Image (cartoon, rainbow, N blue to C red):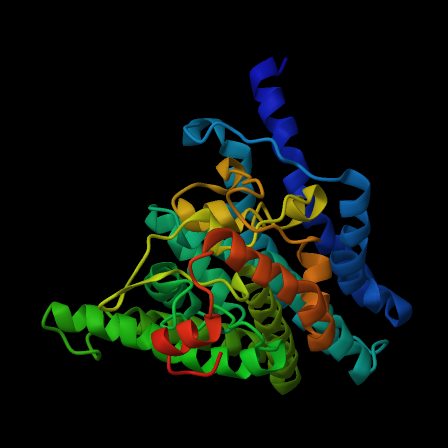
Amino acid sequence: MIAPEILNRWQSALPFWISILLVPLAWFAAITGGWSLILVPLTTWWAFAILDQLTGLNTENADPQTPDGQLNWYIRLTQLWVPIQFLTLFGLIWYATHSAHLSSLEKVALFFGVGVITGTIGINYSHELMHQKSRFERTLGDILLAMVLYSHFRSEHLLVHHRYVGTPRDPVTARYNEGFHRFYPRVLIQCLRSAFKAERDMLARKGLPWTNLRNPFFRYWALQAGMILLAFVLGGFSGVLLFLVQAGVAIWQLELVNYVEHYGLTRKHLGDGKYETVQPRHSWNAAHKASNWLLINLQRHSDHHYKPDRRFPLLQNHTEEDAPQLPYGYPVMTVAAMIPPLWRRVMNPRVRSWRRHYYPEITDWLDYNKARNPMPR
C-alpha cells in the first residue's frame, strides 16, 4: 500500500513526465517513415499549443522552502532523461544507418525531429541540472550538452548570462527590434567567445593560464569528441552527419527560446558600469499549463532569474504587477519569432508598455540605449 503522501507527490509530478512520450513517438517515426516523420515537431510545437488553450493557466505556487526530499519524482525525471536520451539518440543513429526503408531525406527528417527532442527537452533538462550544487547532476548536464555539441552553454549561462542579463554585456538578451535571424548568428559567435573568456578570466584570477586542465573547455571538447566518435562507430560518416543534423536543430531550438525569454528587456544602468539587481520584471513570464509541463516550468523564467537556485517545481509564477507576461507559451512564441514582422507586431507594443510601467522616468529610450551601449538597438 502506497502512503497517501507519497502518492500525492507522484501524482503532482506526473504531468511533467509527459516528455517521455516523445521517445516512443520518435521510434515509431523511424520504423514507419513517411508522414510519421512530422509527428515529433508537430507534437512539440502545435499539439502543446492547443493543449495550452485547453488547459489554461497555472498561477498556483508551491512552497519555495520545500526540501529536496519531497521532490524525488521531479529530480528523478531530469536525471533519468540522460540515459533515455543517450540510448534514443545513438540507438536511432544505428537503426537509421542500418535500415533500407528510409530514404536519405527521410533520415534527415527523422533527425530533425530528434533534434527537436534533444533541444526542447535535453538542453532544457541540462539547464536544470547545471544549476544544482551536486557534482553528479552537473555532470549529467554536461553529458546532455555534449550530445548537441553545445557544452560551452554551461559556462556562458552560469558565468555570463545570469550575471549580465538585461545589459549590453549579455549576448543572449535580444535587443529591441533585433529580429531572430540577426540575433541567431550573433549569439552563436558571441556566446562561445564570452564563455571562453569567462573561464579564462577565472583561471587568471587564480594565477593560472587558460591551458590549465582545470579549464572546463577541455572536458567539453573531450565529451563532444567522444559523442562524435560514437556516432561514427555506430553509423559511419552517415551517422556523424545525422548526429550533426540533430545537434544543429537542438541549438536552434535553444536559441529561439533564449531570444523569447528576454526580448527588449533591460536593467537600469546606475552608472560606473553598474546595473540594478535582477528582478522578475527582467524576464518574460508565461503561466501556460501544458507547455510548462513539457518544459519543466522554464516559462516561469522571471522567477528563475530572480532565484536561480530554485528547482523547477518550486519556481513561482509572477503576476503582471511583478513581471511582463507573454500572450502565449513558448511553442507559439518561438514560431512567431521566426517571422520578424509578426514578432514585432506582437511584442514591440508589449516592450513599450513594459518600459512605461517600470521606468516612466526614462522618456527617450533611443538616447538611453545609446548611452549605455554603443551598439545599435
